Amino acid sequence: MSSTPPSPSTPPAPRLPLAGVLRLGRPSEIWFKPALSVVAAIAPPAFTLLALGRLDLVMYAMAGSLCALYAHNRPYAARARVLVWVVLGMLGGVAVALVSASLTGSAVVLVTVGALLAAAQKVLCDATRVGPPGNVVLTFVSSASLFAPQTLSQVPGHLALAAATGAWAWLVCMAPALVRPHGPERRATATALKAAAVYADTGGTGEGHARARAAGYAAVQAAWQSLLSTRAPSRTRRALERLVVRAEVALAAPTEADAGRLRTWAGSLRGTGPVPEAGLPHAAADELLGVDATRPLWTRLGPLTPLAARTALGCALAGYASLALGIGRPYWALVTAASLYQANVALTWSRAVQRVVGNVVGVLVFLAVVPLAHLGPAALVLCCLAFSFGAEVLISRNYWLGSVCVTPMALLITEFAGYQKAGTLMTERVVDTVVGALVGFVAAVAVTNRRAGDRVERALTTTDRAREHAARLLAEPDPGPAALESARRGLAIALSDLRATADAAAGEWWQRALPQERVVLAEQSGHRTLAATARRQGLLPDRDPATETEDARP
Image (cartoon, rainbow, N blue to C red):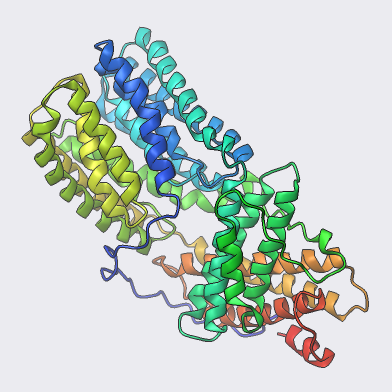
């Protein structure tokens, strides 16, 4: 294990970046899937209620319809299970909100309930990796329900409507399985291959190689999670696994990877054609099944405790501040605060800037379209559908750009129960956004996450142990293909977790200095061992045994 002493215990200087916060990125490759799905999920219930003259119930219908935003990156077998839990989670949050609204008229109590719900939704979504869009949509629905006039006798009917539209959203999201049953796995594998090709282009030492390597390992890990979430093995899955192994090997030895071939394989995964055979040059290729690195849920909840405290405190204080200012919809401030919290303070700051900018611009968009929306109930529904589509088209490029569409949609939803003064709505929205962003960020700074440094130390220990285990196997005359594969994958996962943990901790405030030098050394020795292990498996050209042993050393 590395013997380099820890860095001095001095807190890092606070960093609040502005450069690049609003920069637009590349759109998601599947942006059209959630965009089309949410429109297909919202439109039939909304127009049905329009025909029945009950647009006042659209909010409850949309609660279920918005579940169509989830799980588009999951294989269909896993998607079916995840969407059931999303719908049940949405119904649970709405049920608590509606019952609370019917039992008390105290805005302070309702804000407190909303803050606790937001914290629970944040932690569960992060721990189960449900997203995008994660907890924000669930919090928006439950928080809005808290301030909807309600009686206990109305709750069952409203929940039934939300459950029915949730079931419809499930069908909408599962429908593409009839046309392209392995589409999500193929996309995840193609993404891993392309990310590995980008890293191979750097040769492992060129400009941006560290970022490309981290992105590559994250993509490979996502591909394994996608493939391993499908329990029933198939010929297609086995072929995709071999391609993911090829991507993983390219990350371990970028100078010996063929970036062009990786991109060719990725391109061939489009459509429904046959999956190309990677041709692994090893007699025991059937042993390469991947290692399921999923940890028990309870082990993932512990590190999220500071995030839960930040969310609960920030949402509660934002709602109370909105009430103190006399704003009629404190849940807007609550939801703004809930949307901010990311892996660390630096990322939370960036999201706060994006949220404020997006909402202010969105309010101006609302001002421009409100005359059109007021032409009639049908125009109001059509405008909401257009903004829901636009939000999913734009949000993957940058959060603020998606908020430009989300904000007018949220404002229009309030008008299903009756038209309201545009000026009042706009003022309340801007004030609540600013209040929620400021108070929410202050709560993020106040609730320190001193465990971040401890998690880096644990990740370093795990990485060192994984590297030593792989090195011991390499020293054996016949370690066995399954043992080598398990060791290689375990080390790859440990290195990926180490980089993610170090990046997250680097953006935290009020903690001791991180052992950055030890992290770099652990990564360097770990990647050398990965290359030696892949070569021993026959996945790379042979080299001199003495060199191979040297590569495996720290």
